[in-house]
Image (cartoon, rainbow, N blue to C red; front, side):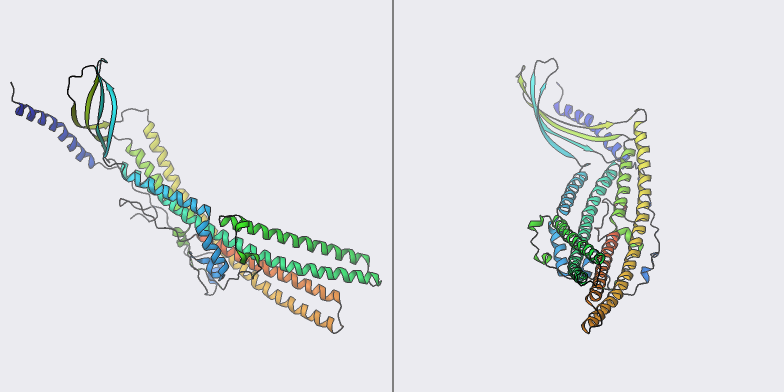
Length: 486
């Protein structure tokens, strides 16, 4: 009879040889690397804005994160803070960010060893004995040919995009809250002026009617005055409808119904928000880190590069190490054999041989997609600079228009005062005074509209500049898409 010690030693050597070959092959393959470097993104932007607005005098420079505080309006500040807490779109973006974080955390363990416990029935060949098998199994896929790095790039890009989207939702929300608040205060001012216009038109109608009765006027004058009165009343009704509309919009932004808005300050007419002198000094290069569309385009390049790396890795073999420890218990048939726990560790290899060029087609498609992503990034930069420059020029134009309306209002005020004085001393009549009052009211409405348009152009400017977006960087030492490759 053979020595059991000698037999066990021979079996150990027999098992050790293939295992050693597996590990040696693993070490050799570990040196294999597929070139999956990120492409260099074009960073060229204009050195300055084309708009002449950059020559504006120095003034308040609001930061991107709290730019709306330039209005110095406590009610507006409270609305923005409440919206950031309660807006549903921001909450949705936050939940999507949490989902992306979870998936990214999962991807980090994709190439780590796993361990499972299984219980399952098994029938021996011939169908004469049935077993129940239980035990552990483990699989460790080796991270070769850049597969792991590429996989991490795709999930990192998804995570970064979700973070950018969450921050962009806040930027858009603040812009919309400020926009609707500006519209609300402008509508309140317009309703107030239109109320004065209605009263003045009523005076005109009464005066022309009195003149007709005293044969000092004509029916045509009465008809014209009544038509002007009807138009003024219709305009006043439209202004009230705008008030209701802006209140509903604000309620939606604050995540509630208009009936539950509970903002008493909005029910009372207040002065329109006024901006101080502002000089915007953000340069076009700053858009590369603040504009969401450009940042999303960067992450799209990172994701496309990751998908290309995975497609290239699929051209090469996949190697795994599989281990099991299974105990088999006979339930039917031959029940005399004792239970046995059998350990096993062995390599698993999948080698692509022939697939009619399907994997190569995927690589070609991913290469084209990466080139398209780089071009899309360049397009995002061009569009971002153009939109921000246009918004800056519009803000400068609206600032000049506001200055002109202020001069007009002052002149109309003097004219109305003079008409009232002439009427008081008997050198003018009620119609002259009413006409001067209407001219003043029209100037007030143009002044209100100019304030509104400058404020809205300011909102559009800072929305085009983007906001304080989060810093993003791929893990594992990979070159981030948001930085130029070195």
